[in-house]
Each structure stands twice: as C-alpha cells, then as structure tokens.
Length: 278
Image (cartoon, rainbow, N blue to C red; front, side, top):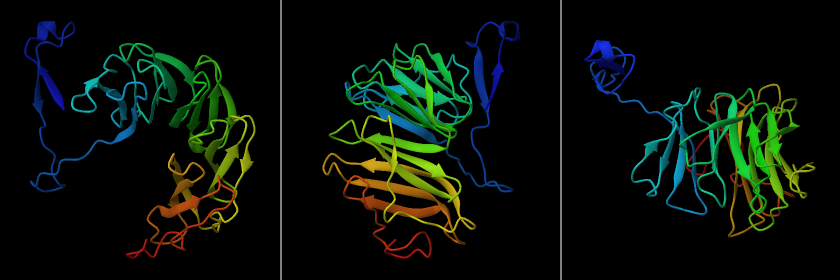
C-alpha cells in the first residue's frame, strides 16, 4: 500500500498528514476479478494468568495484542525492526506482560506488555516454538530451524542442545519433568520423536511403530506435537512432508497412548492416495 503526504515540508518529521492512496483491492492475474489475498498469522498464544490477553505474530512481521480475548487488536511492534515474519510467540505462565517472540533470526522479549522489546539471542534461523517450563518458568526452550536452544535464567543466556532442525517441543500435561521433542533425522529423511524424563537434560528416541520412509524419495517439511490433559500419556504427532507423488505435503498423524513407547498411524497409510477415511 502506498501512502501520500499532503504536506511535503513535514514529511520527515511526522506521519500525521499521511493518507492511503491504495491499492485497495488485488485482482486475479490478468483479470479485473477481485481476489483479496491472505496474510498469515504464524503464531498465537493466550495468557494462562489472564485469559483475556493474547499475542500473535504475523507473516508481515507484526506482533499484535488483544486485552479482550480477541475482539480488538493493537499492533505492539510498530517501533521495532522486526522482519521475516514473527514465527513463534509465548507468554510467561504467570506474568502476562512478559512475552517472548521469534523473528528476524532472533529471540526478543518484552517485560512491559509489548511497549518495548529487547533482543535476547541471535539464533540465525527461524524459531518455530517457544515453551516455558510449566513450574520453573526461568527454564525456556526454543525449537528452531537450526537447533534446539534452552535458557535456565529466564532468557538471559542460551545454550544449544541440538543443532538439527527441531519443530516442536511440549511438556507432559501432569508431569513437567517429561518433555517431548520433534526433530529432524536428515539421514533417514524423517521427523523423530524424542522424550526426556529429566526436564530436557537428556533425550531418548521413541520410534517403535513410527514412520519409516524411503530416504531416497522422501522430503521433510515439518511437524507438530499435540497433547491433552484429558489423557496425559497420549501424544499426537502431525507429520508434514512427502514420500511419493500426490502426497501433497501431508504424511499423516501418528498416535501414542503410552508416552511414546509405541506408535501407530490409525488410517493405516502414509500420505496418498486420499479418500473419505484419510
């Protein structure tokens, strides 16, 4: 969108006289048919201590905040140099003014509800997920495209746990000592689920019944972990990628009912051909 200043003499000192002159609509290529395109929301988090407050990060690199559970939103990163899309957002479990975000190949923090932001760590990659330890919030994990980072002092200093691409990390709903991690095995061209029973100090691969592709024809794009307090030992893992023609970037959902000891794909196949069952 282009903005025009009605008072050129004041152009460098103020934005008060700027008006939008368009474009106000986008069109299908080569036609006059309106076709408004989307801008993605990459990350969203709701405060545990104040559920009316949510923060989201967008493809256009803005961080937005709502204090009325989503009815109205305010851009809280207008004065920042955030670029490249804000790909991860996480609110402190007991302090809704303390928020971490990933963007611009960095981890940023606000302690005043988004009024000001401070760079905490250069990760040189895309941050996919930030998680606070549920009962020890000074311990923070950040899963990124070039590894897993952790901080034990509230984000002041960070160390690298893995240098492989990691997509998601989550805590057992009732036992925070148990942590799940979804990371890349580039040699086997697959996502793998690791579990830690000591708050992330050590990790063990859990792949009994897990997806085993042909590495010569497979590509890996990502994945997500889902857990539920309704059945604390159950884990779902969504696997994004392809192994053959027409998979269209989707491999399927694997489920474990015993903290990752055993896995199954309940639809019985990976990827295509798709039908009413899968």
